[in-house]
Length: 256
Image (cartoon, rainbow, N blue to C red):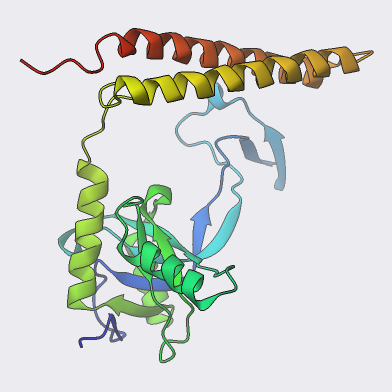
């Protein structure tokens, strides 16, 4: 049986399926931007509104480290300025029985229910634990930066041929899935169950809203924001229920 991984040579070019350790992920500076200002030879920072960000502005950025796998195509990895990587998180087995542990591993490795994930088995030769690469959380880094990391020995593995084909298949499934409208596939019986479920959720949401509203003697802005969120959820539940009722009228019709 061919190995899932192979060990890259230090001088190999960057390829799809290369696995790096301790790669920096750019943080969320754009969500809470802080401008870096040089004035009179001194550095200072100040908050800046997101809408006022312009080309050339220097921002302070939060960075975290993660293991990650290159998912850009190998032909792009040879010359592209930036490459796309999928962060890798450890797959922990919380189940106690071997049966449940194995089912968790098998599901992670073979199920197409979550095509954005790729199971990466642990390997004693490469000294890393089983994990999951998440295409949905992909980020980019400069190719030249990754080449420096590779020279430093931070590229610890690359996928074997069979594993690389499976990576490409998983990404293809994720990117080419045919999305189904929420009301295009259920039968009338299915929608009856969903309507009953929504009725229960509406009752629970309204009771919680009433209880929370009655508990506040001096509601502040954060509390009022919570009540608005609850109102929005109730509106969404009621709107969805109405859509289910409409869809139910034609749910079992045959295509012409």
